Amino acid sequence: MAQPKYRKIAEDLRRQIKSGALRVGDRLPTEPRLQEHYDASRNTVRDATAVLVNEGLIERVPGRSGGMVVREKVTLTFHAHRAEMPAGPTAETDAWRSEVVKQGYEASQDFRLTIEVLTPELAERLHVEPESAAALRRCVRHINGQPSSVQDTYYPMDLAREVTELLSPRDIPQGTTRLLAERGYSQRGYYDEYGSRMPTPEEATLLRLQPGTPVLLFIRTGYTEQRPVRVSVTVFAGDRNRVFSTHGDASIIAKWRPEEATR
Image (tube, rainbow, N blue to C red; front, side):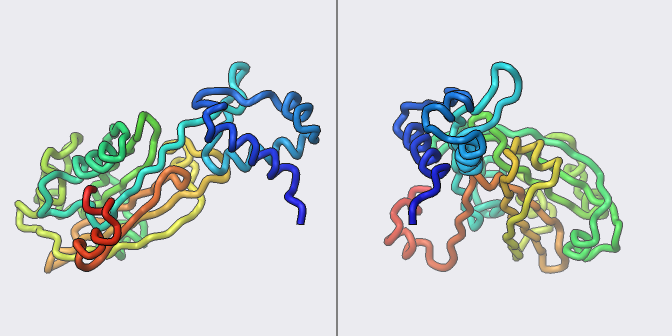
């Protein structure tokens, strides 16, 4: 079966991007020029560029000086099994930052604290009454200046009133997992959930997502021996993240995947 013309055009443009003929920040030729070059209709050219937009290779930039621009393709590998471990040598943010740096990127984040009413789903995870209040600590994380993920962590208000640092409008130096362990709330178990969906309007804005780009969800509920103490909801931009998780003897895995031993 013959390949549709729009896919042939997308394949040629993709090749130019990957070869360096079109570099990050370069503008693609205008639609009329692409139509003329490929002897294609306007809709065919638009279908071709839409493929590249969905792959994260180009983006639509509005305005007179805009158009279709080659974007930086940054894909972070997030090791979920290593995230936020209280026995680790670094805080949660430092552990994430270390992963970013090891993969050759620059890391930064914006932090915000608010008090929110829990949704029924979050209240159920935390085993509190529906519509209870919670301290929400939000981190919008950037890689090479581009938003990559949003992490929202919810703490029950009775816990936040006892461990008052959770209500600080600043990042906590040792990380909240270690802080809670120091105050007698060592998390002994985690329940992780994974999923994907289309972003909410707020998520699309925060992560600067192109239309049609899904998000990857990583939801972790942390438990002490007595109770759940927090729910972390991380929303990853689907076109620039992948999540790994290993279980069992890490040395055996590293034997067959040597790259895991250095991360």
